[in-house]
Length: 297
Ligand SMILES: C[S@@+](CC[C@H](N)C(=O)[O-])C[C@H]1O[C@@H](n2cnc3c(N)ncnc32)[C@H](O)[C@@H]1O
Ligand SMILES: [Zn+2]
Image 1: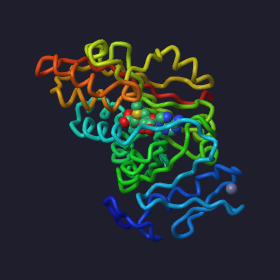
Image 2: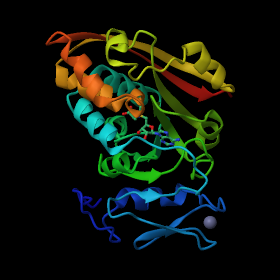
Image 3: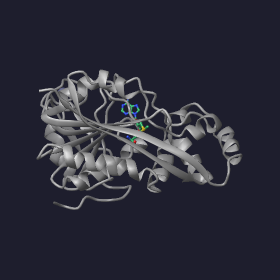
């Protein structure tokens, strides 16, 4: 395999995107649903002639033009990258990776990270599954730029997870869905018969010490029973409650607050003033649930 170009100014010549070349035949046209798509130098195309440019930053936009949602801002994505690089969420990352290694089908050729952000979890899972290729799906250009170089075997596309995914049916061995929006019917459609979905959600007590003081941060109110109901036609094959304590400096609390959904609404200066009132090292609860689901046979 050729080493992909790493860096912000990668040019999309025909040899520098091995991951895109490896997965392009599993993509579907967002306009006419034709599949497979094919690479043609700096674009990918369907047989009806719809064409999608490979951005200089390495990802491809397969948006249908209908999407009404927005992804994370550049500031949120930068905060996410800063926070995740500290590896404070390592217990979550290790759990997701171990569950993927244990429950993935024998040859999961494709791992799709839905609303995958910067590809943080996707890259670990690809390390654990050496024969697999990865695809990060997100709406945020800033996140996609990072995701497209998160791992030599990862590609990235812009798509709205609330719309039909631009993927052929029964193409995906593992779907990751970590704190992001998801459509179960589409997960169902893209998974192979042996495929699994690995879903991480925040428990009710996640970051509870910060909620009142710094705003509601990254809390997913979805309860496990709600997840089970949403995944009709699936069985849970594993569920892990991951709980640990974080000790965070002010700048780390700031990054955590700035990367979460509340950053869309809250005022950064007000948030900073609230953070300054906290002790130098802030003790915080991390509480996530990771569930592995497979289609009922
Ligand atoms: C809370 S972040 C989680 C990112 C990643 N899974 C992680 O845990 O690091 C949610 C992500 O969903 C993306 N997003 C939001 N709405 C979306 C949509 N409708 N379609 C695709 N991605 C979306 C955001 O851009 C953001 O990267
Ligand atoms: Zn088409």
